Length: 616
Figure 1 (cartoon, rainbow, N blue to C red):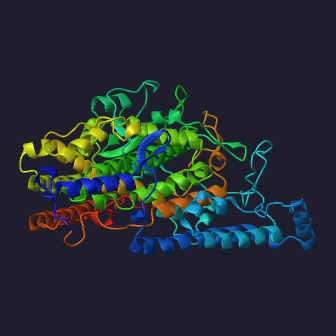
Figure 2 (figure 1 turned 90 degrees about the horizontal axis):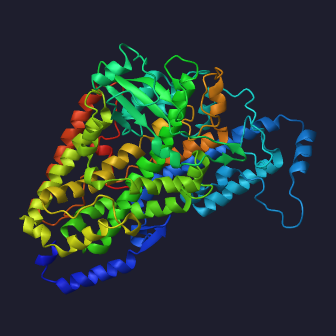
Figure 3 (figure 1 turned 180 degrees about the vertical axis):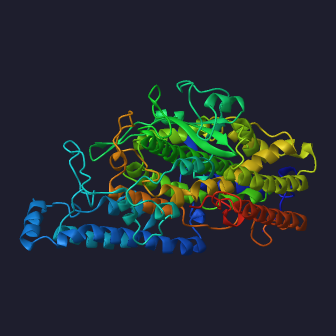
């Protein structure tokens, strides 16, 4: 492994320049959604390692088996039909004319881009042929039991729910584990309690939405009460009133599925603090629309409108835009402008492992037309991609380090806030390691300003987003500024991604807890008690949601702070890495202790469960 040098100290400058020229031919910028910030392709060296494949294979198998069992359970009722009736149905559905497509009866799940992404071609073909035979022989199901039937979008009627109950959505977990929140869901009721709704804001998959409200936000009535005591105005005066505002979702355009409209709203939810814990106060589903209070008609459905907004904001902004895409921008600048033996290149590369490959696969399938995001979530795929890109353009790196982000939101009054507390602890451990690392390789501020490659790296990142830059980036002038940037990169690629990725299955895969889209308009105050059934997706899409989010949450590959033996090749730096691991171990013990006092253990930022990089 080459010895590490900053450029001005490298005894072989010509060899270094040759390596950079070679890197730029391998790492070429490509265009996605009019942005030239990402890799044109994933180089072969970025393809998954065997250990990653070994870890993901059992989960791929579970997803495939789960889909097969679900399809089988869906068609079994047809077996009870008289033979003559099945024959009439088959004749009516048989393809006609020369060259009729063999794929006419295939399920959308088998054709989805998620399958193309995660299952090898041979397995897909085998599954498709078996499923095709079953459908052609036994017949498709009514929408009440198997809502995957292909319908003409121009004539599609409102789907019939039949006797479908909320608890029936548990049936999508055939070979997959049932998430804890789903396993305790009541049989024929809405299990999203006010307490659970508030808890998800501080310990769910999208825990960075709350911001302190100085006054009662516009559009909320002045007579709002806080459940548990006092008024909303009094809570604001005590600095204990908080708003979750999903205004960026206004960029989304509501889509349809087989002619049936789907909805997402730029909702606003108001919360207050009672005895250190967050409680829900009011919800406004649409700008200028009615405000719902706990216990009021429409309140329960309004919570689900917020859940839909939270899921779309999470997937497109918090997850895709501000972890996957943001890290790839830094990755490209590093690969193209810092030589392989540059100390920062060596430090950052483990935190980039697998990211270009997984992003390339996602752009080609997961977030492509008719891919899982297109099927599960509410916006058109075009507007969804525009929103993800806009989340980068709206970011200000000057204030994007974690301590500043948290300080700006002024959440100190919320005593029970697991994500905030655990994230800050991981950030501090990472920051201490980075500070020691920089001190070793840059013994003075002059060494930073004299680093030619660092200047070129900074020039790219300070440019326009469309050209590989990040808004608010400024060339670092000293150890503190460079340390903040490097810590942010490592933290985003590891802990921040872990915090938004791994809660997806436990908190987002069960459609009655969080639907990717609303299948009925927001409540208007006259909502019938059973409105939740009409608001939830077809069972086929609920199954796709469970399978996709299970897979995305399944693999923990590598562990934060655990670099390869001798990775840095310098005893003093290896000692710093060892101290980093010790600090993370102490953080893990502190989180375990804190979980004993929490409403529910929060485990997504346990350092032993945080991968080094975005590789799933």
